Length: 573
Image (cartoon, rainbow, N blue to C red; front, top):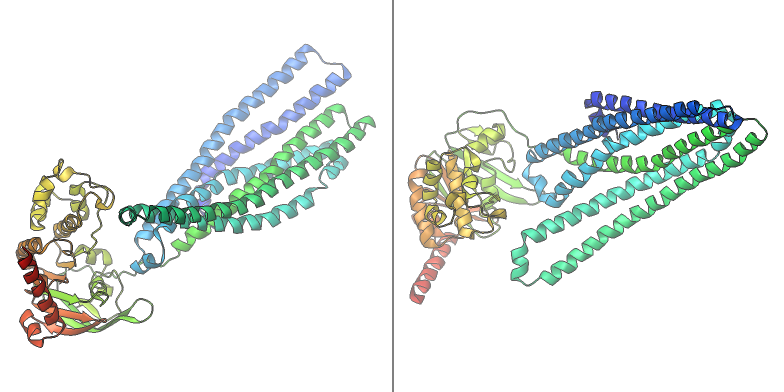
């Protein structure tokens, strides 16, 4: 809860003004029983006039108006503060997530992060707004009501307070249980959210394999677990609230018996008895609010704990070097692992500006991991990867990545227009967007769409083919005018004829830039200045196309197999 209090302190002016308004409201509520007390005592003695009753009625109406007006203002200041805190934490969480390293996203699911940004933040907002109100109300109303009750009859007040120690025990005991079970609810919600996200994203695969029934059964199980986890919390809170009400009713019963006896014995007046019960009724709200506030605060504390866990994750370590990048790349005896066995072993090679590197190898040989070390997506060991003679770890990551155009195999597209997706890396004119689209071999197909470049492509580019998505991703990388261009199997979903056209278009673009092309097709890398063949994380072959053919190793086998496939396909035509 101390983390939530820290945020409340940042908005202390609003909170203090809200509490001041709340004090006025509670003060007016405290005065009403005093007015009723005087009116009832005069009625009991028979010495009251119509004018007196009118005065008391108008006075109560005036207090009610004060309560209504100032209740609006405390709601404005305090509930608004809760919304501002929610906005602030959400921005901080989102900004922090963007700074986290790639390894973090390998172990934390998207659904968990979505739950933090929605359900958890909602619980924090409730704790920092209504939780503050309930806590303040408990303190103010219970304190003033208790003082007023003591002023009427200390002994009767003592009788009324008999159930309080038991009430305190219940609140403390149940508070811990509520906190623990709410954490379980939030975790179950994260699992549910991730399942929905995954199934919606993979809907085409589900339909293609006719797995709708299996998906429904799996979701139904997870949904059922979510409900069961919630019901465990409901049972605790369901028992908590009736216990609070029982103690409140027990207090009323004790007061009725002991207070009625005092009235009969003339120890207190009938007006004082009515006022005492009115104050006791006001004390019931804090007793109930204890349970409500405990629930809200414990939920907020549990959610804030989950958010802080994400916020405590260390961000990417970035250097400070921001010198202009030319494109010289050097790997020196690099070995790299994620968390166990090395994925790359003893990798050494160098490229000069304007050179083209081709990388081939079987699936899982470490090709993608190798190129992801260059923009610092994965952090290489110090002294192993250099750009223009500077250790990659010493560069400002923002500066470094702005100088690198990276296109993965599954180029991600946003649910926006084609133009917005291509111009994602920088502001650009229509002419610049069209130019890079022509180089990527996608311009003519874009113009066939009804809205051309203004066509909205749907979530993750669902309306486009795999090849179209890859070429739009290539156009996006070209638009940033990078010093280093990396194509990570970025032409895997286009036919060989289209691939040849794109590579031909790219040749002039690549002449003044360092380029790296990962591919399973020999045709995509055969004109490279250097070709690396990886196997089990090691460079097993290195050289030009002609040199590797002479070795008659893995590269030669790739070449012969693909040439044979082309011959077979040619005969089929």
